[in-house]
Image (cartoon, rainbow, N blue to C red; front, side, top):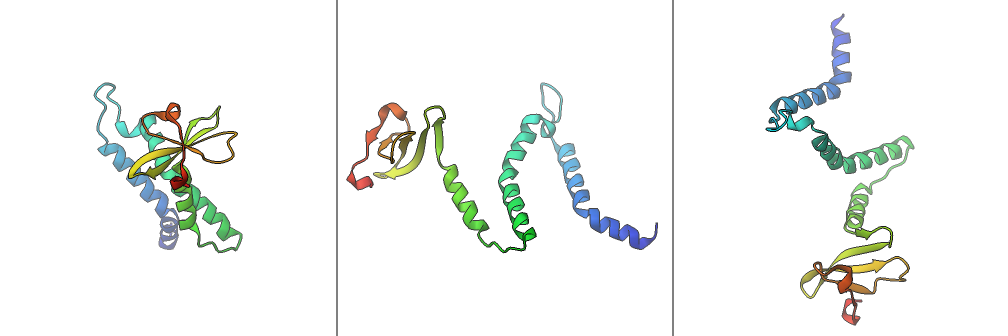
Length: 143
């Protein structure tokens, strides 16, 4: 194979080669599980955790790729990431009842604002420890 073709092939496949080397290195350096003797890096739980950790950046990259392919320009990646982080702060407590909690600073401590499906607006709060049973109405200082 001529030298130019090898250089072009290496240039083209360089990211995949680096990824493969990193994965093999992580596998080789991974400690063994004492019970099963398997490498911890390749357990399904660990691989799923890695997937969870990179999914946010992957989704942003896919979205930006589509914007670039459509010949558009979008400089709002940071804004989208910030907004999605805020939405991630919502805690879905009961999907069947549509019960959501939102972290909130009240009187110098963190409490949850509480909203349930069917309510027009957020009108209640509760301590983190008490949950839904400890709901209290918001007063005028909270609005």
